[in-house]
Length: 91
Image (cartoon, rainbow, N blue to C red; front, top):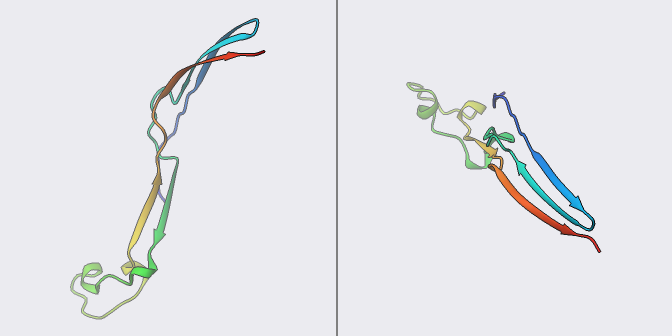
């Protein structure tokens, strides 16, 4: 298991419409929260195993267990703060 911490995403949208014209001010992730969206832990079995000495100092035997298989993490990061203005016209 891995702990990513708390995540707080705040968005806001304010707009004004008059007849067929609409103008909107919007923001996403306004506090620029950078907590990961997702983390995937994986084991790379295609890479073989690490030398026994790298995993277990002083151990001279060859081993192929989960503790000597290369591992990694894939992390999905969020978009940073986004702000913008949208203009719409309906006809």
